[in-house]
Image 1 (cartoon, one colour):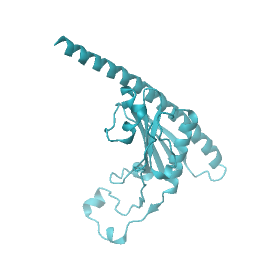
Image 2 (cartoon, rainbow, N blue to C red):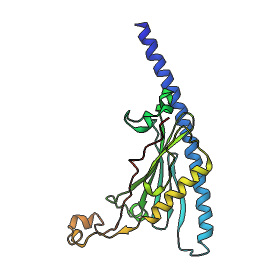
Image 3 (cartoon, helix red, strand yellow):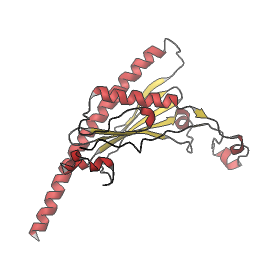
Image 4 (tube, rainbow, N blue to C red):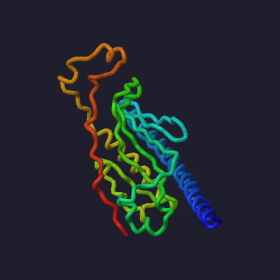
Length: 226
């Protein structure tokens, strides 16, 4: 009985320590991402105002776990999840030698970047979709793994070699903004908007609102296995 209690205690102790460290690492990365975003927005604002002062570019802090970048008609949401996660055993990352060598590397903090139309939030259009552009996984050693849409054109899929730095974070933000800008709005088919109900009108369900084409997520991409 005592042996079992000791086994349970050791398992809890090791996991709790690991997860607390990962949470702190992820918070630090998120704050660096926030700082890079503020600098980038300020840089872009100074440049665009000389061309067209009506083009809005702004950073907005929502809380400790979320901030937004609004630029023209697009809105990027960066969200840090408060929980530490693991992945299914059949995920390619979990099959890598790097993860297999240390059980603590099986746990990750995660930060997500979503793209919405800015007006969807401004006018509270609850049915408008947003799109996940990328997810950054952070481990106990401050290494990261990036899963993202093909439009990001980033290939950080070898966690053993990927260490967080400011340049990488800036590249992630810039690539997400480029992917958002290049994903144009498509008007709905006229048959879809030929009729609306009074309820839709009263609830301001904008059935004629154009939507983004969407993104191709790089599910097929596999990390290098070592």
